[in-house]
Image (cartoon, rainbow, N blue to C red; front, side):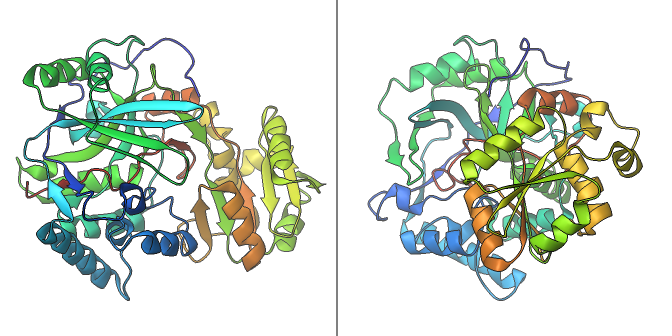
Length: 430
């Protein structure tokens, strides 16, 4: 989705600093295929179905590092560290000989995205260099921090966006020139996306990129928990050192607009009948006996005029809209911008989860956050829970709130396409 308005950014004390690093990549001769060892980001994998599928795709799939499986958290992290070191020792993973930035391209039938992968200097929130827009869950940050401490590696890049001037100059010019050369790797994953990667090592190209990026700030599109983890680990380690940087993919959305999708909720312990009975006096509720695509169309239409949600899990879809204004006034916190108070995610968490359904949002036993719409519905119907399907937020709303220093409720947006995990890693020892 394209952003509205010109490429304007809040003044920053110092801009983005993207440094070269020695990327760690799979040796294609040691794995079945590059596609078979990649994975979506750790929080997009639908567990356990997606986890088992990826583990069986190739014994060296990156999911064994980003989502290790063992009986305790400590054992999982020790296993990931041992696996990483074994793959390095065996030559399954190999470090590039020369530091560089990496041009990364993703393409499907309707979309082309290009960006730069590098080690970004970590900035404090007060510097306004990297803007978060969502709250994070402390237990997830701690989980990711434990994994990074054990492996001493950035296993997958988070996704940042910035707004260039829309023309191929500076960093954009280097990206376009680089893609005219043969890539380091090329593969196509089962989601239909083709992936290509190039290294940028020429000093003049690196200077051109760094000079351009120094004028910009970035928005976190995907990876708030990993960004919070980077900041936590930097605070734990002496300065200067490898923990002062974190692995990112940086995309100029003036040239390559991202797609913005919703992240849905699965309420494990709330049957649909109970969920509907609790909301019937507070929202307008309409049953939709239609296929999923038509139900999502109805949700989109309703979202144009106010807060709307789609409930599923009992074989049908139920459209919730027209919430009671008095209820919203009582339950949605005051003292925030109107754009924040009227977000679907705000109303979901403050009104539905907290006030009506009494669901603890920090409890994995009660709530899951799932990116795939069909998978959310399928799991709700199979397990007897309630799926809450959301309509996506516009990117310009996200960026405007971030510039005001206002964070959205956690898991409010899903920007994409997300970088595939497993194409390039950053080992801190290097």
